[in-house]
Amino acid sequence: MPRPPKHRRVCALPKSRSFGPDDCSGSEDTAVSMGLDEYETLRLIDLLGYTQDECAGQMGVARTTVQAVYNCARKKLADMLVNGKRLVIEGGNYELCGIAQSCCGRGAGGCRRRSCQADDHIIRRGDVPMKFAVTYENGQVFQHFGHTEQFKVYEAENGKIVSQKIIDADGAGHGALAGFLKDNGVDVLICGGIGGGARSALAEAGIELYPGASGSADEQAEAFIRGELQYDPDTQCSHHDHEHHEGHDGHCGGHCGH
Image (cartoon, rainbow, N blue to C red; front, side):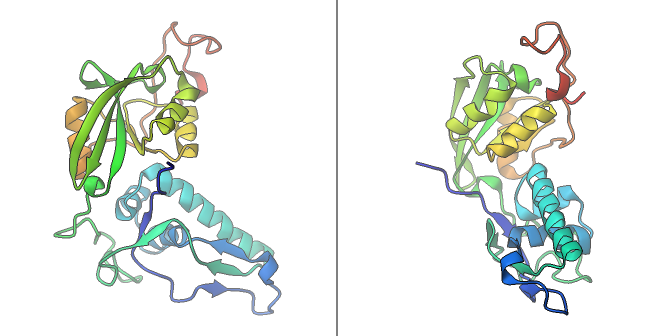
């Protein structure tokens, strides 16, 4: 049974849903469709001045997800302006914030630090059923994603971890690990170092990424559920040795982004 799509939290709906040239040259057939989740990234980053990390926290997704959605929104906006097309804002993979009338600043004068995750409105990642994995070795977060031999997989519901198990990667290399995780129903990956190729594969598989974590796997899993995971979205794999898979010439190459 396929997993339900992961929704991005939207805190403000647009006052107008359709925009177009004054000369009415933009037709319905050539209209650009922008999702409400894409619109939200523009509102938070370009209008309210959020960083991509802050935007990710506000929308309840990974920074890599925000980056991809934001880039797509900017491209659509450019297409509309440069080619004189109509813009229609509708649909998208989103859910409306339950306190949307009072959080995060609904206009240019809003407080950029106000968040759905602030004060008594904390929304933890474990509040909805989910499955997440941690690169694993001897109880610790393994630091080289492409060489991961085991993952520890956790299932969480209502803010608590309800099950956990260790699974073998079955010898899957850099490119195959994303598919392996997806086949096991994983929504989120927590890891140490990871390269660009693996990042892209995980994004294509719809798996959110939290790199740069270290220490006890169980402690990092609990921190993630509480919304307190310490990670670095810009972490790159710096692993270089002569034992890499064939075709890597003894270096991580593009996969490790070094």
